[in-house]
Image (cartoon, rainbow, N blue to C red; front, side, top):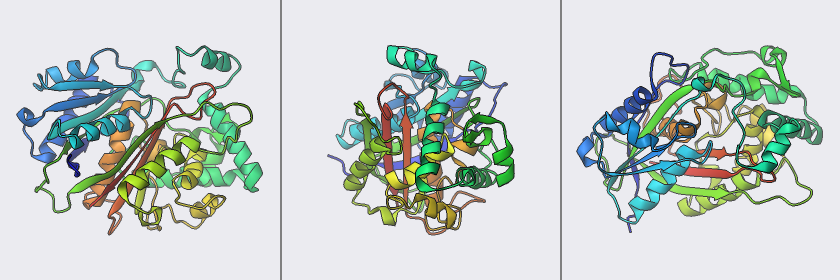
Length: 383
Protein backbone atom coordinates (compact mmCIF):
# COMPACT_ATOMS: atom_id res chain seq x y z
CA UNK A 1 0.00 0.00 0.00
CA UNK A 2 1.04 3.59 -0.65
CA UNK A 3 1.30 5.56 2.57
CA UNK A 4 1.56 9.04 1.06
CA UNK A 5 -1.14 10.89 -0.86
CA UNK A 6 -0.06 14.35 -2.02
CA UNK A 7 -2.11 17.28 -3.29
CA UNK A 8 -0.01 18.18 -6.32
CA UNK A 9 -2.24 20.94 -7.64
CA UNK A 10 -5.15 23.05 -6.40
CA UNK A 11 -7.41 25.52 -8.14
CA UNK A 12 -10.88 27.06 -7.90
CA UNK A 13 -13.07 29.62 -9.57
CA UNK A 14 -14.36 32.63 -7.73
CA UNK A 15 -17.62 31.78 -5.96
CA UNK A 16 -20.58 33.96 -6.83
CA UNK A 17 -23.28 34.53 -9.41
CA UNK A 18 -21.94 33.51 -12.84
CA UNK A 19 -24.79 34.27 -15.22
CA UNK A 20 -22.44 34.33 -18.20
CA UNK A 21 -20.81 30.94 -17.49
CA UNK A 22 -22.13 27.40 -17.76
CA UNK A 23 -21.43 24.58 -15.32
CA UNK A 24 -19.05 23.22 -17.97
CA UNK A 25 -17.13 26.51 -17.99
CA UNK A 26 -16.78 26.49 -14.20
CA UNK A 27 -15.71 22.85 -13.87
CA UNK A 28 -13.30 22.98 -16.76
CA UNK A 29 -11.66 26.16 -15.47
CA UNK A 30 -11.07 24.59 -12.06
CA UNK A 31 -9.76 21.28 -13.43
CA UNK A 32 -7.50 22.98 -15.99
CA UNK A 33 -6.13 25.22 -13.26
CA UNK A 34 -5.39 22.29 -10.96
CA UNK A 35 -3.63 20.34 -13.72
CA UNK A 36 -1.54 23.39 -14.59
CA UNK A 37 -0.68 23.94 -10.94
CA UNK A 38 0.36 20.28 -10.63
CA UNK A 39 2.25 20.30 -13.93
CA UNK A 40 0.28 17.20 -14.89
CA UNK A 41 -0.82 16.50 -18.47
CA UNK A 42 -4.38 15.38 -19.18
CA UNK A 43 -3.02 12.08 -20.47
CA UNK A 44 -1.55 11.32 -17.03
CA UNK A 45 -4.92 11.39 -15.26
CA UNK A 46 -5.96 7.84 -14.43
CA UNK A 47 -9.27 8.54 -12.70
CA UNK A 48 -11.66 11.42 -12.06
CA UNK A 49 -13.95 11.96 -9.07
CA UNK A 50 -16.74 14.45 -9.82
CA UNK A 51 -18.78 15.84 -6.91
CA UNK A 52 -22.14 17.50 -7.44
CA UNK A 53 -25.61 17.57 -5.89
CA UNK A 54 -28.12 19.07 -8.34
CA UNK A 55 -26.51 18.58 -11.77
CA UNK A 56 -28.13 15.31 -12.81
CA UNK A 57 -26.98 11.98 -14.24
CA UNK A 58 -23.39 11.26 -15.44
CA UNK A 59 -22.55 14.92 -14.93
CA UNK A 60 -18.80 14.32 -14.62
CA UNK A 61 -18.62 12.73 -18.05
CA UNK A 62 -20.56 15.61 -19.57
CA UNK A 63 -18.31 18.24 -17.97
CA UNK A 64 -15.02 16.54 -18.88
CA UNK A 65 -15.98 15.56 -22.44
CA UNK A 66 -15.19 18.91 -24.04
CA UNK A 67 -12.06 19.32 -21.95
CA UNK A 68 -10.70 16.22 -23.67
CA UNK A 69 -10.30 14.10 -20.55
CA UNK A 70 -12.18 11.00 -21.64
CA UNK A 71 -11.47 7.33 -21.14
CA UNK A 72 -10.28 7.09 -17.50
CA UNK A 73 -12.52 5.78 -14.76
CA UNK A 74 -14.92 8.52 -13.72
CA UNK A 75 -16.90 8.39 -10.48
CA UNK A 76 -19.84 10.71 -9.87
CA UNK A 77 -20.19 11.39 -6.14
CA UNK A 78 -23.22 12.83 -4.32
CA UNK A 79 -23.31 13.12 -0.53
CA UNK A 80 -25.13 16.44 -0.05
CA UNK A 81 -22.88 19.23 1.24
CA UNK A 82 -20.16 16.66 1.98
CA UNK A 83 -20.00 15.53 -1.68
CA UNK A 84 -16.64 17.12 -2.49
CA UNK A 85 -14.97 15.94 0.71
CA UNK A 86 -16.41 12.44 0.19
CA UNK A 87 -14.97 12.37 -3.33
CA UNK A 88 -11.54 13.19 -1.91
CA UNK A 89 -11.94 10.42 0.67
CA UNK A 90 -12.77 7.84 -2.00
CA UNK A 91 -9.85 8.97 -4.16
CA UNK A 92 -7.48 8.63 -1.21
CA UNK A 93 -8.58 5.00 -0.74
CA UNK A 94 -7.90 4.15 -4.37
CA UNK A 95 -4.49 5.82 -4.33
CA UNK A 96 -3.43 4.12 -1.12
CA UNK A 97 -4.47 0.75 -2.54
CA UNK A 98 -2.27 1.36 -5.57
CA UNK A 99 -5.13 1.39 -8.09
CA UNK A 100 -3.95 4.73 -9.45
CA UNK A 101 -0.97 7.08 -9.20
CA UNK A 102 -2.61 10.33 -10.27
CA UNK A 103 -6.27 11.38 -10.11
CA UNK A 104 -8.36 14.54 -10.32
CA UNK A 105 -11.09 15.42 -7.83
CA UNK A 106 -13.42 18.28 -8.61
CA UNK A 107 -16.68 19.68 -7.29
CA UNK A 108 -19.07 22.04 -9.02
CA UNK A 109 -22.50 23.55 -8.47
CA UNK A 110 -24.67 26.20 -10.06
CA UNK A 111 -27.25 27.02 -7.44
CA UNK A 112 -28.37 30.26 -9.09
CA UNK A 113 -30.25 28.09 -11.59
CA UNK A 114 -32.53 26.96 -8.73
CA UNK A 115 -33.88 30.49 -8.37
CA UNK A 116 -32.76 31.33 -4.82
CA UNK A 117 -34.41 30.75 -1.46
CA UNK A 118 -33.69 27.86 0.88
CA UNK A 119 -32.08 24.79 -0.66
CA UNK A 120 -34.71 22.05 -1.21
CA UNK A 121 -34.85 19.39 1.50
CA UNK A 122 -34.52 15.66 0.91
CA UNK A 123 -37.25 14.58 -1.52
CA UNK A 124 -37.26 10.82 -0.95
CA UNK A 125 -37.65 10.74 2.84
CA UNK A 126 -41.29 10.78 3.91
CA UNK A 127 -40.29 11.77 7.45
CA UNK A 128 -38.36 14.81 6.23
CA UNK A 129 -41.36 15.88 4.12
CA UNK A 130 -43.57 15.59 7.20
CA UNK A 131 -41.15 17.69 9.26
CA UNK A 132 -40.94 20.30 6.49
CA UNK A 133 -44.73 20.57 6.34
CA UNK A 134 -44.59 21.66 9.98
CA UNK A 135 -41.97 24.32 9.28
CA UNK A 136 -38.86 22.30 10.03
CA UNK A 137 -36.15 23.52 7.65
CA UNK A 138 -32.38 23.75 8.05
CA UNK A 139 -32.52 27.42 9.17
CA UNK A 140 -35.12 26.55 11.83
CA UNK A 141 -33.11 23.56 13.04
CA UNK A 142 -30.01 25.71 13.50
CA UNK A 143 -32.10 28.49 15.03
CA UNK A 144 -33.23 26.05 17.72
CA UNK A 145 -29.61 25.09 18.32
CA UNK A 146 -28.67 28.75 18.56
CA UNK A 147 -31.48 29.47 21.01
CA UNK A 148 -30.53 26.50 23.17
CA UNK A 149 -26.83 27.43 23.10
CA UNK A 150 -27.48 30.98 24.26
CA UNK A 151 -29.79 29.73 27.00
CA UNK A 152 -27.51 26.99 28.33
CA UNK A 153 -24.31 29.01 28.14
CA UNK A 154 -25.79 32.28 29.38
CA UNK A 155 -24.69 34.13 26.24
CA UNK A 156 -26.18 36.98 24.20
CA UNK A 157 -27.10 37.02 20.47
CA UNK A 158 -24.00 39.16 19.91
CA UNK A 159 -21.91 36.00 20.33
CA UNK A 160 -23.46 34.36 17.28
CA UNK A 161 -23.22 37.58 15.30
CA UNK A 162 -19.52 37.73 16.11
CA UNK A 163 -18.93 34.64 13.93
CA UNK A 164 -20.42 36.48 10.93
CA UNK A 165 -18.31 39.57 11.63
CA UNK A 166 -15.13 37.49 11.79
CA UNK A 167 -15.77 35.42 8.70
CA UNK A 168 -16.95 38.35 6.59
CA UNK A 169 -13.75 40.15 7.61
CA UNK A 170 -11.73 37.17 6.37
CA UNK A 171 -13.78 36.96 3.17
CA UNK A 172 -13.06 40.60 2.42
CA UNK A 173 -9.42 39.56 1.94
CA UNK A 174 -10.21 36.64 -0.36
CA UNK A 175 -10.61 37.41 -4.09
CA UNK A 176 -12.42 34.07 -4.53
CA UNK A 177 -15.15 34.84 -1.97
CA UNK A 178 -18.72 35.70 -2.92
CA UNK A 179 -19.15 38.25 -0.11
CA UNK A 180 -16.20 40.63 0.16
CA UNK A 181 -17.63 43.34 2.39
CA UNK A 182 -16.87 43.62 6.09
CA UNK A 183 -19.83 44.03 8.43
CA UNK A 184 -20.28 45.33 11.95
CA UNK A 185 -21.94 43.56 14.84
CA UNK A 186 -24.83 46.00 14.63
CA UNK A 187 -25.31 45.35 10.91
CA UNK A 188 -25.43 41.59 11.49
CA UNK A 189 -27.95 41.87 14.33
CA UNK A 190 -30.17 44.30 12.40
CA UNK A 191 -30.20 42.33 9.15
CA UNK A 192 -33.49 40.61 8.27
CA UNK A 193 -34.60 37.97 10.77
CA UNK A 194 -34.64 34.47 9.23
CA UNK A 195 -35.37 32.32 12.29
CA UNK A 196 -34.74 33.73 15.74
CA UNK A 197 -31.98 34.27 16.77
CA UNK A 198 -30.45 33.89 13.27
CA UNK A 199 -30.51 36.92 11.00
CA UNK A 200 -29.79 36.97 7.28
CA UNK A 201 -26.07 37.71 7.68
CA UNK A 202 -25.75 34.66 9.94
CA UNK A 203 -26.82 32.27 7.17
CA UNK A 204 -24.62 31.28 4.23
CA UNK A 205 -25.74 32.51 0.78
CA UNK A 206 -27.83 29.94 -1.09
CA UNK A 207 -27.52 31.43 -4.58
CA UNK A 208 -23.94 30.79 -5.59
CA UNK A 209 -22.04 29.12 -8.40
CA UNK A 210 -18.50 27.79 -8.41
CA UNK A 211 -16.06 24.95 -8.87
CA UNK A 212 -12.88 23.69 -7.22
CA UNK A 213 -10.40 20.96 -8.15
CA UNK A 214 -7.32 19.22 -6.80
CA UNK A 215 -4.86 16.75 -8.29
CA UNK A 216 -3.98 13.88 -5.96
CA UNK A 217 -0.95 11.68 -6.51
CA UNK A 218 1.24 9.13 -4.76
CA UNK A 219 4.33 10.65 -6.43
CA UNK A 220 6.04 13.37 -4.39
CA UNK A 221 5.50 16.68 -6.24
CA UNK A 222 8.53 18.84 -6.94
CA UNK A 223 7.00 22.04 -8.34
CA UNK A 224 6.22 23.49 -4.88
CA UNK A 225 8.76 23.86 -2.07
CA UNK A 226 6.23 22.60 0.50
CA UNK A 227 4.35 19.56 -0.88
CA UNK A 228 1.09 18.98 0.99
CA UNK A 229 0.06 15.50 2.15
CA UNK A 230 -3.32 14.22 3.24
CA UNK A 231 -2.51 12.84 6.68
CA UNK A 232 -6.01 11.74 7.68
CA UNK A 233 -9.29 11.23 5.85
CA UNK A 234 -12.52 10.11 7.51
CA UNK A 235 -16.17 9.98 6.46
CA UNK A 236 -19.05 8.82 8.65
CA UNK A 237 -22.85 8.67 8.44
CA UNK A 238 -25.21 9.77 11.17
CA UNK A 239 -26.79 7.60 13.83
CA UNK A 240 -30.55 7.51 14.10
CA UNK A 241 -31.52 9.43 17.22
CA UNK A 242 -34.12 7.68 19.38
CA UNK A 243 -35.94 9.64 22.04
CA UNK A 244 -34.50 12.71 23.73
CA UNK A 245 -31.53 14.27 21.94
CA UNK A 246 -29.01 16.97 22.86
CA UNK A 247 -29.22 19.31 19.87
CA UNK A 248 -25.91 20.92 20.87
CA UNK A 249 -24.04 17.64 20.55
CA UNK A 250 -22.40 17.56 17.08
CA UNK A 251 -21.87 13.82 17.55
CA UNK A 252 -21.20 12.85 13.95
CA UNK A 253 -18.53 15.54 13.54
CA UNK A 254 -16.86 14.64 16.83
CA UNK A 255 -16.81 10.97 15.85
CA UNK A 256 -15.40 11.67 12.38
CA UNK A 257 -12.76 14.03 13.78
CA UNK A 258 -11.57 11.39 16.26
CA UNK A 259 -11.02 8.97 13.37
CA UNK A 260 -9.09 11.56 11.36
CA UNK A 261 -6.89 12.47 14.33
CA UNK A 262 -6.17 8.79 14.96
CA UNK A 263 -5.23 8.17 11.32
CA UNK A 264 -2.98 11.20 11.08
CA UNK A 265 -1.33 10.97 14.50
CA UNK A 266 -2.00 14.71 14.84
CA UNK A 267 -2.94 16.16 18.22
CA UNK A 268 -5.78 18.72 18.01
CA UNK A 269 -3.60 21.32 19.74
CA UNK A 270 -1.14 21.13 16.81
CA UNK A 271 -3.71 22.19 14.19
CA UNK A 272 -2.76 25.62 12.83
CA UNK A 273 -5.88 26.47 10.80
CA UNK A 274 -9.33 25.12 10.06
CA UNK A 275 -11.85 25.39 7.26
CA UNK A 276 -15.21 24.23 8.65
CA UNK A 277 -18.86 24.06 7.67
CA UNK A 278 -20.28 27.36 8.98
CA UNK A 279 -23.57 27.20 7.08
CA UNK A 280 -25.00 29.09 10.07
CA UNK A 281 -23.12 30.97 12.77
CA UNK A 282 -24.11 28.60 15.54
CA UNK A 283 -22.60 25.67 13.59
CA UNK A 284 -19.08 27.10 13.87
CA UNK A 285 -19.41 27.46 17.64
CA UNK A 286 -20.57 23.85 18.00
CA UNK A 287 -17.76 22.55 15.81
CA UNK A 288 -15.06 24.28 17.89
CA UNK A 289 -15.74 21.73 20.58
CA UNK A 290 -16.56 18.77 18.30
CA UNK A 291 -13.17 19.22 16.57
CA UNK A 292 -11.44 19.51 19.98
CA UNK A 293 -10.23 23.04 19.29
CA UNK A 294 -11.80 23.92 22.64
CA UNK A 295 -12.79 21.85 25.65
CA UNK A 296 -16.52 21.25 26.27
CA UNK A 297 -18.16 24.50 27.29
CA UNK A 298 -15.23 26.68 26.20
CA UNK A 299 -16.04 27.30 22.53
CA UNK A 300 -17.39 30.79 23.15
CA UNK A 301 -14.16 31.82 24.90
CA UNK A 302 -12.19 30.74 21.84
CA UNK A 303 -14.11 33.25 19.74
CA UNK A 304 -14.13 36.04 22.32
CA UNK A 305 -10.36 35.80 22.82
CA UNK A 306 -9.75 36.20 19.09
CA UNK A 307 -8.15 32.75 18.87
CA UNK A 308 -10.09 31.83 15.72
CA UNK A 309 -9.50 35.10 13.85
CA UNK A 310 -6.58 35.77 11.54
CA UNK A 311 -3.61 36.36 13.81
CA UNK A 312 -5.10 34.13 16.50
CA UNK A 313 -3.95 30.76 17.80
CA UNK A 314 -5.98 28.67 15.33
CA UNK A 315 -7.68 30.77 12.63
CA UNK A 316 -10.99 29.26 11.53
CA UNK A 317 -12.30 29.89 8.01
CA UNK A 318 -9.54 32.23 6.81
CA UNK A 319 -11.18 31.97 3.37
CA UNK A 320 -14.34 33.55 4.77
CA UNK A 321 -16.02 30.17 5.18
CA UNK A 322 -19.43 29.36 3.80
CA UNK A 323 -20.80 32.59 5.31
CA UNK A 324 -18.61 34.80 3.12
CA UNK A 325 -16.92 32.63 0.50
CA UNK A 326 -20.22 30.93 -0.37
CA UNK A 327 -21.51 27.38 -0.45
CA UNK A 328 -21.90 25.82 -3.92
CA UNK A 329 -22.65 22.42 -2.40
CA UNK A 330 -20.62 19.97 -4.50
CA UNK A 331 -17.64 22.31 -4.65
CA UNK A 332 -17.43 23.26 -0.97
CA UNK A 333 -15.41 20.33 0.42
CA UNK A 334 -12.84 20.57 -2.36
CA UNK A 335 -12.61 24.36 -2.04
CA UNK A 336 -11.86 24.00 1.67
CA UNK A 337 -8.83 21.90 0.72
CA UNK A 338 -7.73 24.40 -1.90
CA UNK A 339 -7.63 27.08 0.80
CA UNK A 340 -5.64 24.86 3.17
CA UNK A 341 -3.14 23.98 0.42
CA UNK A 342 -2.64 27.64 -0.45
CA UNK A 343 -2.16 28.50 3.23
CA UNK A 344 0.34 25.70 3.88
CA UNK A 345 2.30 26.70 0.76
CA UNK A 346 2.27 30.43 1.59
CA UNK A 347 0.09 31.26 -1.43
CA UNK A 348 -2.90 32.83 0.37
CA UNK A 349 -2.10 36.45 -0.45
CA UNK A 350 -3.79 38.98 1.81
CA UNK A 351 -4.85 36.44 4.45
CA UNK A 352 -1.72 34.33 4.87
CA UNK A 353 -1.26 32.50 8.17
CA UNK A 354 2.47 32.50 8.83
CA UNK A 355 4.23 29.26 9.69
CA UNK A 356 1.19 27.01 9.27
CA UNK A 357 2.06 23.31 8.96
CA UNK A 358 -1.17 21.47 9.80
CA UNK A 359 -4.65 22.27 8.48
CA UNK A 360 -8.04 20.62 9.00
CA UNK A 361 -11.20 20.65 6.89
CA UNK A 362 -14.67 19.63 8.11
CA UNK A 363 -17.82 19.32 6.05
CA UNK A 364 -21.22 17.92 7.01
CA UNK A 365 -24.10 17.19 4.69
CA UNK A 366 -27.70 16.17 4.47
CA UNK A 367 -30.59 17.13 6.69
CA UNK A 368 -32.75 14.05 7.15
CA UNK A 369 -35.31 13.25 9.83
CA UNK A 370 -34.07 11.71 13.05
CA UNK A 371 -30.35 12.00 12.26
CA UNK A 372 -27.81 14.66 13.31
CA UNK A 373 -26.50 14.82 9.73
CA UNK A 374 -26.49 12.29 6.92
CA UNK A 375 -22.73 12.58 6.39
CA UNK A 376 -19.62 14.16 7.85
CA UNK A 377 -16.10 14.35 6.46
CA UNK A 378 -12.89 15.49 8.16
CA UNK A 379 -9.49 15.73 6.49
CA UNK A 380 -6.16 16.66 8.01
CA UNK A 381 -3.47 18.07 5.72
CA UNK A 382 0.18 18.77 6.49
CA UNK A 383 3.56 19.76 5.10
